[in-house]
Length: 389
Image 1 (cartoon, helix red, strand yellow):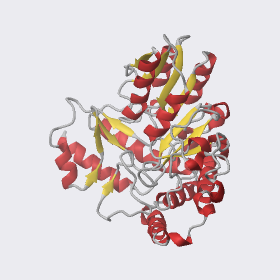
Image 2 (spheres, one colour):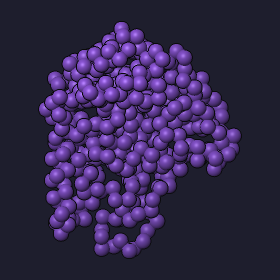
Image 3 (cartoon, rainbow, N blue to C red):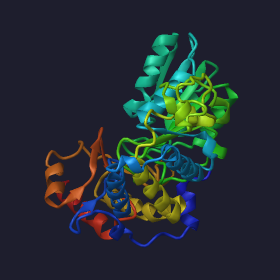
Image 4 (cartoon, helix red, strand yellow):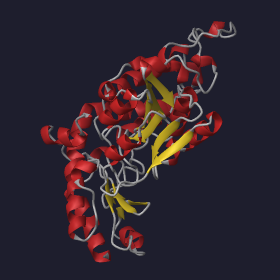
């Protein structure tokens, strides 16, 4: 599977897009992996949506469905899939719980996860194996940083599900999901991908990876609002059981006059898995504005823009004495720095004084720029780091 690093070598980078974001001029915000700053266009869409919602007498039955279908189409284009496979969810945890509810774990079978994986992609599987008599297999952080090899070694005939991200949330450690997916299918196991920390910044193609479920929260690299995300479901998983049984998930729900003609038939494709009130009249228009902007840029161009900034962070931090994974083993949009003796106790205050924002995750300093950052932002961070070490 090609990676964003490959794409970055052949795709032209974007000029700095800072003017499109709600960012103070004096802030070096290198923390998109925490939460994306808001695009001005997303803010405008939200304001317009709130005003529209203030006049409910203008809403028609079609308004409960039309934007949802637009969202499905945009997400499908983003992942190389089909719109029928897209469900609208409120969070990554909802989508992952949906996957866990539809992938039985028989007694003695296992679910493979990463050590220190984000909790939303661990707790649903802990519950699933407890209910089914299975077992959770947590892949230890590899000493050489090669998560792909470590996960491949953990997949065996007992594996029922491989539930992993595209990159580790604490430091950007990269997984080759094409290889992982192939190994899972060879053992008859399902693949569930939490792409919250990659979708929108790292090119992804469901035709190559072939996940059973692909889940992403929308407020990080998808640049959308909080409490709205998406789940793409493989064709052979679209006849499962939804987490909620609401009116909009039923066949014929577009006809409001016939809603009490109850039916067991569900809407086609992954629509049955939509969260209740998925047609959120404020958040959904904001998400559409963000998705359109991402597709206008192109994810490969976004990756090509971020990668040089991360390479500069990695080079400067390494020169200052930090340990950084080789470029081939880390995602090109997130850099995790491990410092001798751990982060200095005053690093956070030094960064705050310099108006530089990054994250401390586990034992790593996580740096995650985006298309609104410049080389000057990177140098401000590195100057603080050098002074603290």
